[in-house]
Length: 146
Image 1 (cartoon, one colour):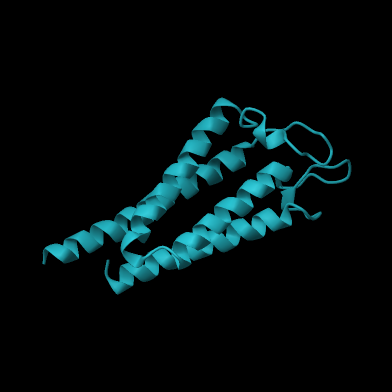
Image 2: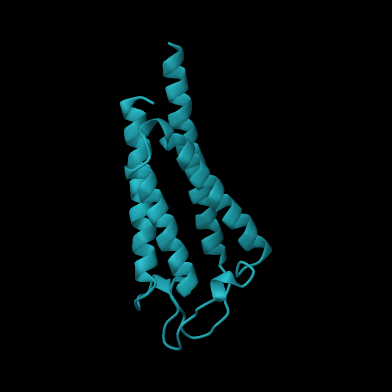
């Protein structure tokens, strides 16, 4: 992978990682963007404790890809990350609360599922990740043939 492609994949994975970790942490405090629905507040993206933990875990995975995976393998890892999010999308389309997993450990005991906005974000994250990984990997393969 060329240095330019390495920078693109690394920057993308780092940005996604920071956003997901921040989203996961925000879910634990009261705010209008992400978190549990209460009697006085409905965030833009309703999440529960387990959903916030998933954001933290996948954010840490993206940061691992950005800073620990060797440059030659980052494109493949980012593609795998995208596939993971598309699998999550399909599973949450089948069962909105991911077969009960997302409702576990809720602060208020509310059962909820992911929303259409969540589905759109999961789809975008999956497709863009696969695209970034493919572009970087494909470009490096073309460079190697020269």
